Image: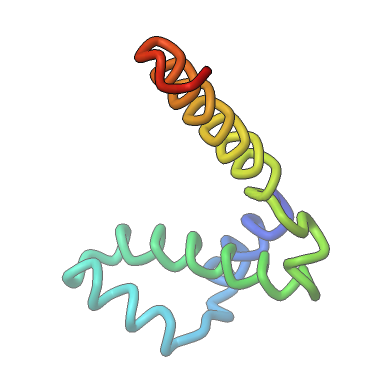
Length: 94
């Protein structure tokens, strides 16, 4: 990531910037050049990060699947335990 960050800085130092992107950053920064420069570096770094990764799904296929399955399983088991405990305490299940 440091390489991509330094590449964004190099763009500004060499004045080899994407003028359209810099104009958007300048507009967002309300005319403040220093703030626009920082925003440009951040956005350029993010842009280079996405260009470097061909397939974002190859990094982590189902990142939230395991936690969701664990939570749903615990919730289901918990509800079943509560239902059977309630029925057994009322004497309706014997």
